[in-house]
Image (cartoon, rainbow, N blue to C red; front, side, top):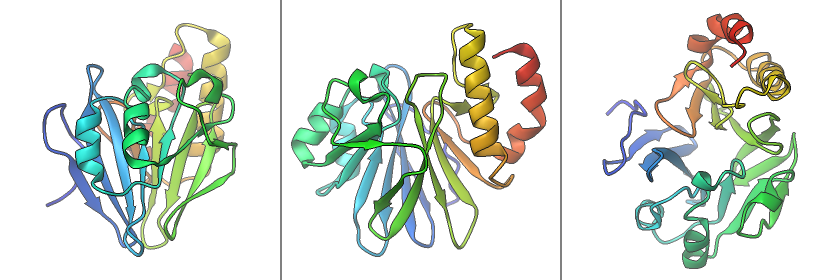
Length: 217
Protein backbone atom coordinates (compact mmCIF):
# COMPACT_ATOMS: atom_id res chain seq x y z
CA UNK A 1 0.00 0.00 0.00
CA UNK A 2 1.10 3.60 -0.62
CA UNK A 3 2.49 5.45 2.37
CA UNK A 4 0.40 8.47 3.40
CA UNK A 5 1.60 9.34 6.91
CA UNK A 6 -1.89 10.07 8.24
CA UNK A 7 -1.86 8.18 11.54
CA UNK A 8 -4.04 8.48 14.64
CA UNK A 9 -3.48 7.64 18.29
CA UNK A 10 -4.77 4.12 18.87
CA UNK A 11 -4.67 3.34 15.17
CA UNK A 12 -2.20 1.33 13.13
CA UNK A 13 1.21 2.68 12.16
CA UNK A 14 2.02 3.59 8.58
CA UNK A 15 5.08 2.07 6.95
CA UNK A 16 7.23 3.44 4.12
CA UNK A 17 9.69 1.08 2.47
CA UNK A 18 12.68 2.68 0.78
CA UNK A 19 15.57 0.96 -0.95
CA UNK A 20 17.81 1.05 2.13
CA UNK A 21 15.53 2.15 4.95
CA UNK A 22 12.12 1.27 6.35
CA UNK A 23 10.25 4.11 8.09
CA UNK A 24 7.40 3.35 10.49
CA UNK A 25 5.27 6.23 11.74
CA UNK A 26 3.02 5.86 14.79
CA UNK A 27 0.94 8.42 16.72
CA UNK A 28 1.03 8.34 20.52
CA UNK A 29 -0.04 10.26 23.60
CA UNK A 30 -2.52 12.99 24.50
CA UNK A 31 -0.83 15.53 22.20
CA UNK A 32 -0.93 13.33 19.10
CA UNK A 33 2.84 13.06 18.90
CA UNK A 34 4.48 11.24 16.04
CA UNK A 35 7.25 8.72 16.69
CA UNK A 36 9.32 7.36 13.82
CA UNK A 37 11.14 4.03 13.76
CA UNK A 38 13.93 3.78 11.19
CA UNK A 39 15.26 0.35 10.29
CA UNK A 40 18.27 -0.28 8.06
CA UNK A 41 17.39 -2.98 5.53
CA UNK A 42 20.96 -4.29 5.32
CA UNK A 43 21.59 -4.76 9.06
CA UNK A 44 18.14 -4.55 10.74
CA UNK A 45 19.58 -1.96 13.14
CA UNK A 46 16.87 0.39 14.37
CA UNK A 47 16.67 4.00 15.53
CA UNK A 48 13.63 5.62 17.14
CA UNK A 49 12.90 9.33 16.78
CA UNK A 50 11.03 10.71 19.83
CA UNK A 51 9.93 8.20 22.46
CA UNK A 52 7.07 10.58 23.11
CA UNK A 53 4.46 8.60 25.06
CA UNK A 54 2.64 5.25 25.27
CA UNK A 55 5.73 3.13 25.91
CA UNK A 56 3.87 -0.18 25.32
CA UNK A 57 2.87 0.99 21.84
CA UNK A 58 6.40 2.08 21.02
CA UNK A 59 7.92 -1.14 22.35
CA UNK A 60 5.48 -3.20 20.30
CA UNK A 61 6.48 -1.18 17.24
CA UNK A 62 10.18 -1.55 17.97
CA UNK A 63 10.16 -5.28 18.67
CA UNK A 64 13.21 -6.97 20.15
CA UNK A 65 16.11 -4.70 19.27
CA UNK A 66 16.70 -0.94 19.34
CA UNK A 67 20.10 0.74 18.99
CA UNK A 68 19.35 4.44 19.52
CA UNK A 69 16.59 6.82 20.59
CA UNK A 70 16.92 10.38 19.30
CA UNK A 71 14.94 13.12 21.04
CA UNK A 72 14.33 16.05 18.71
CA UNK A 73 13.99 18.64 21.49
CA UNK A 74 13.54 19.14 25.20
CA UNK A 75 9.75 19.46 25.47
CA UNK A 76 8.35 16.70 27.68
CA UNK A 77 5.73 15.53 25.22
CA UNK A 78 8.58 14.29 23.00
CA UNK A 79 10.35 12.18 25.61
CA UNK A 80 7.63 11.07 28.03
CA UNK A 81 8.25 7.37 27.31
CA UNK A 82 12.01 7.65 26.92
CA UNK A 83 12.99 6.23 30.31
CA UNK A 84 10.82 3.12 29.89
CA UNK A 85 11.87 2.51 26.30
CA UNK A 86 15.56 2.81 27.18
CA UNK A 87 15.23 0.66 30.29
CA UNK A 88 13.54 -2.08 28.28
CA UNK A 89 15.73 -2.02 25.17
CA UNK A 90 19.09 -0.77 26.42
CA UNK A 91 19.20 1.72 23.56
CA UNK A 92 21.58 4.68 23.76
CA UNK A 93 20.07 8.15 24.00
CA UNK A 94 20.85 11.06 21.69
CA UNK A 95 19.70 14.68 21.54
CA UNK A 96 20.85 18.12 20.51
CA UNK A 97 23.73 19.34 22.67
CA UNK A 98 21.88 22.51 23.70
CA UNK A 99 18.68 20.71 24.77
CA UNK A 100 20.19 17.70 26.53
CA UNK A 101 20.09 19.32 29.98
CA UNK A 102 16.34 19.83 29.63
CA UNK A 103 15.65 16.11 29.18
CA UNK A 104 15.28 14.13 32.41
CA UNK A 105 16.82 10.97 30.94
CA UNK A 106 20.61 11.39 30.55
CA UNK A 107 21.78 11.96 26.97
CA UNK A 108 24.68 9.72 25.98
CA UNK A 109 25.27 11.22 22.53
CA UNK A 110 25.07 14.99 22.25
CA UNK A 111 24.53 16.08 18.67
CA UNK A 112 25.69 19.26 16.94
CA UNK A 113 24.83 20.83 13.60
CA UNK A 114 26.35 18.85 10.75
CA UNK A 115 26.97 15.68 12.75
CA UNK A 116 26.38 12.36 11.05
CA UNK A 117 24.32 9.70 12.81
CA UNK A 118 24.20 6.14 11.54
CA UNK A 119 21.52 3.50 11.74
CA UNK A 120 23.17 0.42 10.30
CA UNK A 121 24.49 1.41 6.87
CA UNK A 122 22.19 4.42 6.58
CA UNK A 123 23.53 7.89 7.42
CA UNK A 124 21.47 10.77 8.80
CA UNK A 125 22.63 14.39 8.92
CA UNK A 126 21.87 16.48 12.01
CA UNK A 127 20.69 20.06 11.56
CA UNK A 128 20.44 22.33 14.60
CA UNK A 129 17.53 24.81 14.39
CA UNK A 130 17.11 27.48 17.06
CA UNK A 131 13.79 29.03 18.01
CA UNK A 132 11.24 26.45 19.13
CA UNK A 133 13.84 25.47 21.72
CA UNK A 134 17.54 26.37 21.98
CA UNK A 135 18.76 22.94 20.90
CA UNK A 136 16.13 21.43 18.63
CA UNK A 137 17.47 19.15 15.90
CA UNK A 138 16.23 17.90 12.56
CA UNK A 139 17.43 14.67 10.96
CA UNK A 140 17.90 14.46 7.19
CA UNK A 141 18.18 11.23 5.24
CA UNK A 142 19.33 11.93 1.69
CA UNK A 143 18.17 8.77 -0.05
CA UNK A 144 20.74 7.93 -2.75
CA UNK A 145 17.98 6.27 -4.78
CA UNK A 146 15.26 8.84 -4.22
CA UNK A 147 14.49 12.17 -2.59
CA UNK A 148 15.49 13.41 0.88
CA UNK A 149 13.47 12.59 3.98
CA UNK A 150 13.43 15.19 6.78
CA UNK A 151 12.36 14.47 10.36
CA UNK A 152 11.60 17.93 11.69
CA UNK A 153 10.30 17.48 15.24
CA UNK A 154 8.43 20.70 16.10
CA UNK A 155 10.51 22.98 13.85
CA UNK A 156 8.49 22.63 10.64
CA UNK A 157 4.90 21.58 9.97
CA UNK A 158 2.39 21.79 7.14
CA UNK A 159 1.51 25.47 7.18
CA UNK A 160 4.42 26.96 9.07
CA UNK A 161 7.39 26.75 11.37
CA UNK A 162 7.10 25.58 14.97
CA UNK A 163 5.58 27.59 17.79
CA UNK A 164 7.71 30.48 19.05
CA UNK A 165 5.05 31.82 21.45
CA UNK A 166 4.92 35.32 20.02
CA UNK A 167 8.63 35.97 20.57
CA UNK A 168 9.82 37.91 17.49
CA UNK A 169 13.49 37.02 18.03
CA UNK A 170 12.72 33.31 18.40
CA UNK A 171 10.55 33.36 15.29
CA UNK A 172 13.22 35.18 13.28
CA UNK A 173 15.82 32.64 14.37
CA UNK A 174 13.68 29.61 13.55
CA UNK A 175 12.49 31.06 10.25
CA UNK A 176 16.08 31.83 9.25
CA UNK A 177 17.34 28.36 10.19
CA UNK A 178 14.47 26.58 8.45
CA UNK A 179 15.17 28.58 5.30
CA UNK A 180 18.95 28.27 5.27
CA UNK A 181 19.31 24.69 6.49
CA UNK A 182 16.22 23.09 4.96
CA UNK A 183 14.54 25.00 2.12
CA UNK A 184 17.72 26.47 0.60
CA UNK A 185 19.55 23.15 0.36
CA UNK A 186 16.86 20.53 -0.26
CA UNK A 187 14.58 20.02 -3.27
CA UNK A 188 10.82 20.34 -3.46
CA UNK A 189 10.51 16.55 -3.42
CA UNK A 190 11.96 16.34 0.11
CA UNK A 191 9.41 14.68 2.37
CA UNK A 192 8.77 16.27 5.78
CA UNK A 193 7.90 14.11 8.80
CA UNK A 194 6.79 16.45 11.63
CA UNK A 195 6.46 15.86 15.36
CA UNK A 196 2.68 16.09 15.24
CA UNK A 197 0.07 15.62 12.52
CA UNK A 198 0.31 14.84 8.84
CA UNK A 199 3.37 14.89 6.64
CA UNK A 200 4.10 17.37 3.87
CA UNK A 201 6.77 18.17 1.28
CA UNK A 202 9.04 21.17 0.89
CA UNK A 203 7.43 21.82 -2.47
CA UNK A 204 4.00 22.14 -0.87
CA UNK A 205 5.29 24.61 1.73
CA UNK A 206 7.82 26.65 -0.23
CA UNK A 207 5.29 29.00 -1.91
CA UNK A 208 4.11 30.13 1.52
CA UNK A 209 7.45 31.15 3.03
CA UNK A 210 6.89 34.87 2.44
CA UNK A 211 3.43 34.60 3.98
CA UNK A 212 4.90 33.01 7.12
CA UNK A 213 7.48 35.77 7.38
CA UNK A 214 4.88 38.49 7.04
CA UNK A 215 2.54 37.05 9.65
CA UNK A 216 5.41 36.35 12.07
CA UNK A 217 4.49 32.79 13.02
